[in-house]
Length: 113
Length: 115
Image (tube, rainbow over all chains, first blue to last red; front, side, top):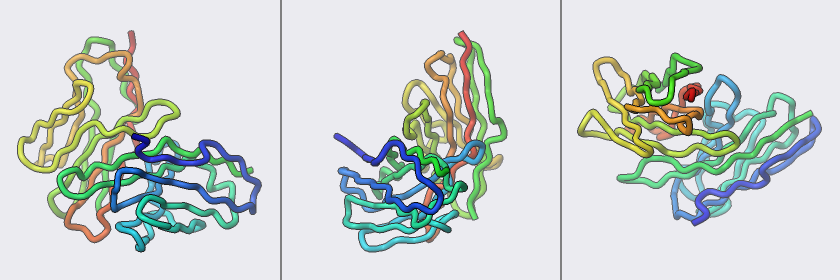
């Protein structure tokens, strides 16, 4: 079982460039999330999708857009990258009901120079 | 708004000794509480959860956590630490009655088990 798969694993961008981080899960989960992890700040929610066709802003959505392409895929787009977006990005998915814990991908380490 | 506090950035413990990683939370309703572990260059792995019932919950790798409603705490414990337990630990909370239904994470505690 692949679980949650993120691509790419590493990326270096120049300021102003755009890119899309891809995330796919094969667990038939309804909810998917994008977090960023910065030293000393834990994980902060960027956007989430409670179900296919819906997306909502999290704690730090500025500078990002998302697309829930289908039930499996949830992409994160940086339209014009800034050095402040240098971070490690994690995608997660969550089933409902009796198993409320989230499952995480291995992360994308993004550096904006 | 829900929040989580992990008051210690770093915890050091000798191998074989008991360990505790502290977590306190704030949420308006009855919380769902979680512990995750992150090894270097890896994603977060689920350790254990409290939803309802017994205040002492047991999880993976010999870890357990105690839910204390009056102190709004959910401390992670292990009776005998291993060097391989060295990692970054995150506490998280979710208010199942909230409209957002997302996890809120603490800032993380780096656990180092010394041989």
